[in-house]
Length: 98
Image 1 (cartoon, rainbow, N blue to C red):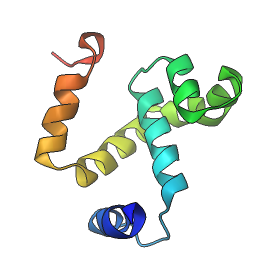
Image 2 (spheres, rainbow, N blue to C red; image 1 turned 135 degrees about the vertical axis):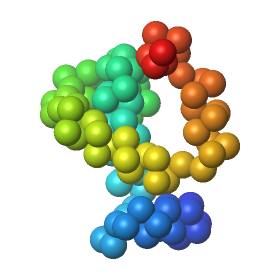
Image 3 (spheres, rainbow, N blue to C red; image 1 turned 180 degrees about the vertical axis):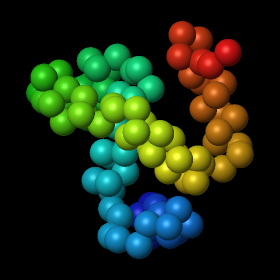
Image 4 (cartoon, helix red, strand yellow; image 1 turned 30 degrees about the vertical axis):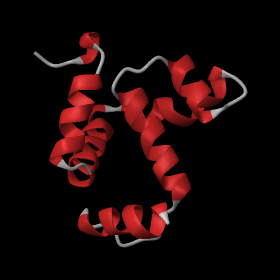
């Protein structure tokens, strides 16, 4: 239900025409966390990788400036105003923009 009722419609709204599934959501979350400076150990634990090197190998490549900008655009398209406000309030002070 999550994929059919929420993820697929959000992907279509963002202009993504290909198949989007739960694994896509998982990878997007992990990439966004790494790109926004989350502790790699935290990301590793959330993804349940056996060690942080697996997480670094998979997601450190997704943190180039161009990729970060593209990920930010996708997140802007997917999030509602309420969820954006909630994320801003929950973001650690060290990563908030001034």
